[in-house]
View 1 (cartoon, rainbow, N blue to C red):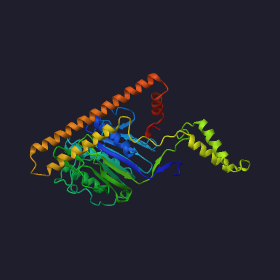
View 2 (tube, rainbow, N blue to C red):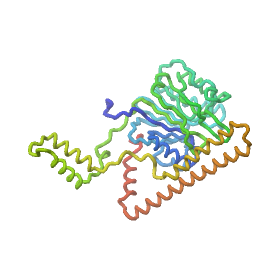
View 3 (cartoon, rainbow, N blue to C red):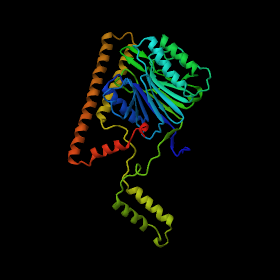
View 4 (cartoon, one colour):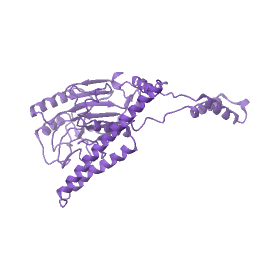
Amino acid sequence: MSAWGQKAKDVMKVLQTNLGRGRGAHDLAYVTAKQLGVDILIVNEPNKSIVKSNDWLKDRRCNIAVFFLNKKLEVYSTKTTGEYIHIRFRDYAMYCCYISPNISIEDFESRVDTLMNSLSAQGEEVIVLGDINSKSTLWGSPLSAQGEEVIVLGDINSKSTLWGSPTNDRRGVYWTEWMAALNLVALNTGDTPTFRRGDCRSYIDVTCSTQEMARKFRDWRVLKEDSLSDHAYIFFQTTDNCPTKKSSLRSGFFPCDWDAFILELEVRIAGMADTAKLSHQQCTKAIKAAYKNSVRRVAGSNTSPYCWNDTISTKRTECTSARRAPTRLARNNSVPDIVKTEAQNSYRVLKKQLCKLIRQEKRKQWLTLCKKLEEDIWGDGYRIAVRELKNLTPYDR
């Protein structure tokens, strides 16, 4: 427990990706985040119609969106601009950014200057996530000491020979100069590409930090699950303690079956040898045990949202396998081009089928909920509405 009476999570889990504005990709990212028990979901190029909800923290251009799955995270402040989103926790900050590959080098340098000047002014441990569309061979080099603990991570669309990229560009060089100025090192591991489009395979996601903060990172990896986007999922954890709100008595309370409680308590008391000489400790123990066995508890939050089922899960597995097939065939020069083309077309068909299944399931669940609401106004629809009113986003508290 922290000095401020807050709980502290030992690990904070983050999932970050670029969705390419796709609605199906957006739904799938949320499912993946739920299944991984992620605390924060960060997306570049989100589906604009979905992130219009107040549950999403988004930048002015709607190129970056952040969703807090863990509503108990203690967020001290947020700031949104046209270049980045700034989220401040107790001991460090997180910057989420996106820079289009279509802007000029002058505009690129201006946006990076804005971001990095804001970052360097913090004098604290900082996390930066983004898509800066740069290439460099210098990611991962140790940087000069500056006395500030800084982390730079995320989908920044940069390429490096360290990750398999054959080229550098001016953007990557400029970004690297800022890395050196802020004493950053690269934390990327593994050899899985983070971007795939046709035959193109790129390693464009970078995670950087100062050496001190780097010790608090673990399990940075590119997930192999299909995302319905050209970009792969980036998953990582920080072991730095993350303050969270204390749960109130009501938030941890579940309805009790009092008839079952009385019966359970009577059985326990009758089972004791001499009821006339029971101590208050024995009575308290029996009451607690009876209540525990009669209360209706929910075993944690659901690992998948309402729009997920076994059929969709199976289709996603097929989609992930089909996505890998073109990659394997591309390495074999003896395979005819027509076979490679067929493999790519097969993957596209499966992607469309997966998106369709998700849409159908969402529609089905919505109609079911509406029907239940007509039958019982105090049923699931009412509970969902009340829950959403209570579960404010961390930065709204």
